[in-house]
Image (cartoon, rainbow, N blue to C red; front, side, top):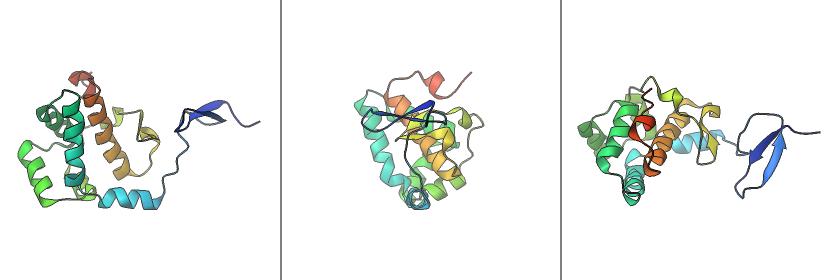
Length: 145
């Protein structure tokens, strides 16, 4: 007997396991290293495209980034210009105290189950951008009570 828990896979099929809801995807050191060395400037245009395609603005995107990291518009522009890696980006950031309230799945991973702090922080940002693009209210995105 294998399971009490259902785990969703890419194709919508279900498997059972004894643990909590989680996707069956392994995160290894190679994955963490790839995220750490990826530049914020290489991902930022994709964030802009995603939110604008769904009718949101760059101003709203910056509001979300500012809430999570504490960076103002000038600092965001500077980090893009400098082509900083996510490792440096989040080492400079002052993460919002409510960031751990960001839960759920993004890119196939359950955020609260990610053990590597940097990978979790990058997924926090991905999740906030995703919620913005999906039209969620800003108050809810920013975990404001």
